[in-house]
Length: 55
Image 1 (cartoon, helix red, strand yellow):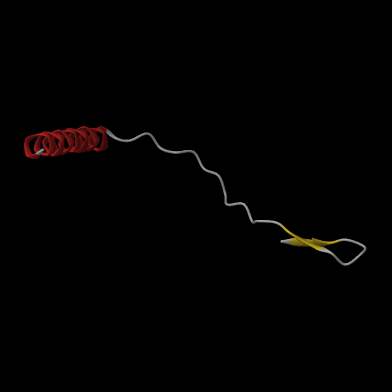
Image 2 (cartoon, rainbow, N blue to C red; image 1 turned 180 degrees about the vertical axis):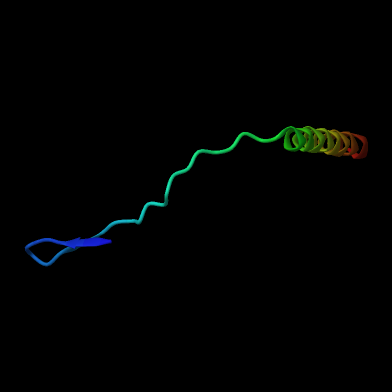
């Protein structure tokens, strides 16, 4: 989308996407997020402990 003024200068405008509300995650998705968070915390903890043990 663009406009042209009387001097011939062109202004370009971005096309805005349609806005829609986000859906709240289902119980199954929430459980998956909790499981992913637990694995991530375990991974970070093991990585830090390994770094401490090696140094």
